[in-house]
Length: 339
Image (tube, rainbow, N blue to C red; front, side, top):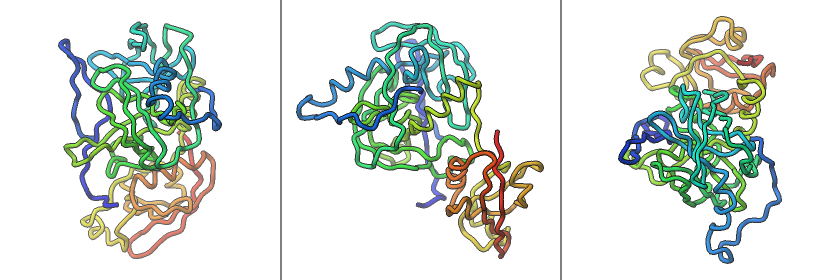
């Protein structure tokens, strides 16, 4: 994968005008029950996914904010999960339901690291969908439900295109766009926070972003896996915040110019731009200008690779890292911190 290419990326919120809904085209950049036994929908017998949508559609809502909107998925009978970028700094929103009713919603907590937020709804008794915590397989059916451009409860279908995806170059600007599910089910501004379903109607992910056609892309959408959604949402509901593994470094891309300037003997990795003096990386001996090329026994070719590997660790876990420093390599042992 070429890491130096510049990609446009759209987070899936949309602005609302009095005369209608307009998509903002920019550049980048639960606990529901879980199940592994639900049978898939027979498309030939059901005439498409109509029955699935009838069943799960009421569990997908529209989140209306001052000047914008996004989507959300019911997590508990009075709680909706959505993206943090949908609600922004607002604490009071309006929730629109599939039955054309609305109620007030209170944003309880947000997590900028995973771009997730939980909202308590004034309305109770909402239908909770099943959340599939095991990852889908590439090639499985994917059905997206949300409110693209304000068209509430719109449905699109495709397949799961890939797993463990990251948007090249995005991690230096937002930490949420790594380790994502890729789908070709059409998603647009306003789908953000909506549901990505499998053929049984289980939620496999919460839609997050897409690469727009202006970047040369065709049907490249991304969703946060349900396992991440459920774990973070439960932490937010219990504690008002989520705990994440912490290294204590600021990272950047290793460009050919920087490689030449530093005199490092590698052409890939995550460049350490700055370091917290009292952080885990500093205590392990990581220095400014080091290039992380291996972490927790995983090869690191980019900032996104390192952030994805860090998500697989736990606070207080001891792990190893390899950094390129000039023409040498240093093997380090790091005790992961928490934040």
